[in-house]
Length: 137
Image 1 (cartoon, rainbow, N blue to C red):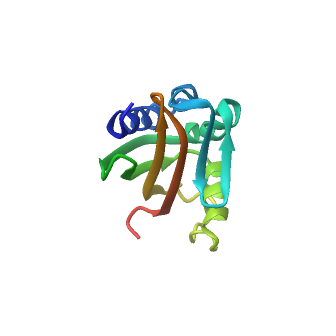
Image 2 (cartoon, rainbow, N blue to C red; image 1 turned 120 degrees about the horizontal axis):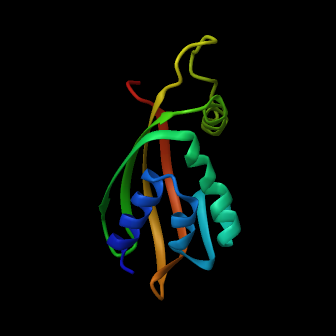
Image 3 (tube, rainbow, N blue to C red; image 1 turned 180 degrees about the vertical axis):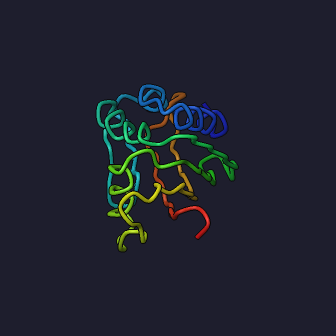
């Protein structure tokens, strides 16, 4: 697997919100650093982490392969649950977006870099650096 094929699979797994497809991109003991401070190890943890994308709707992923190991990615999605909104709000390290009870959940924009170490056709380790914000801000 080369970086372009990995990113094609990553895009498909995210847009289809499919934890099995996501985990299949990795070696059985693969590591996914979704932030510099958190890591998921192995198939079970990868699948459990990826379940959160099932709280997203209308996911659109684009990417550009920058080198054999790096890609720039961009994602937009509609937050589909208050639970996901709370996860995002806590991860930002800031206060919640100004919302009143009953206000619609936001559409989010994420932009980041993914670095992957590919071995024997699968990802051994992926590291992400990204930022997110509500669309239109």
